[in-house]
Image 1 (cartoon, rainbow, N blue to C red):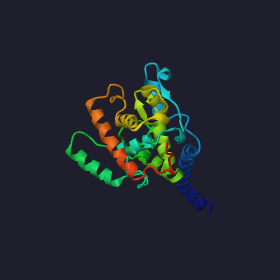
Image 2: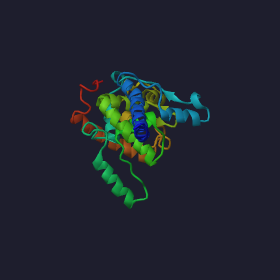
Image 3: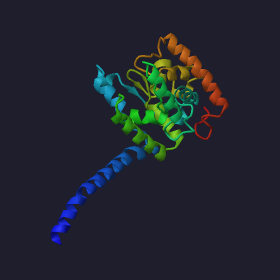
Image 4: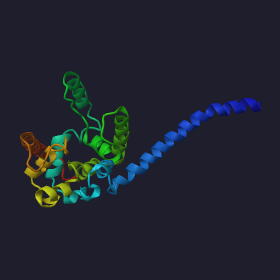
Length: 242
């Protein structure tokens, strides 16, 4: 009987290890994500990577956290128009956009992404650049947690504070002060759209001396922003009407 019980215990050990590992992953994720509901992140993985790889590191890195009460409503309107117009309708993933992106990428050499704002927050805060399946899996995991633990307005607030607007510029406050010499609270529709226009590739696309492509994208974003405003997004309850 004792021999049988020992063999049974050995068979159970791998299962226990799996359960312990899974519990550890959940606990670690909760520690990372849940405080974001109330506290600003100290930094992000993309900021750390930029700091580590920039020629003069921290001396060039610009970032300043600003709460949404001190950010013009033109900013969320612009980033929603540019990056994720279905943000308030999905639960972290826009499956229709994913389907269209897959079909496009099968036909074209130029790849198209379909990441939502929630996915971009997950990537910018916790992960690294790249297109590996491992990173995409971790991105999906953190996206689910963000959507479950945080209100939509908070995810949007995180996004505009950690998004990259230049090679070493992170967050709309730092970008506004560097490029326009004013606080994010005073940005107008034109300026917010110009910032949003560089989001697809803030290292190559420039706010200063913008290319023809950036100017065309800015004009399109302004039109879409006006449409979203008429639709009431973001609502007064979610974002102060500054």
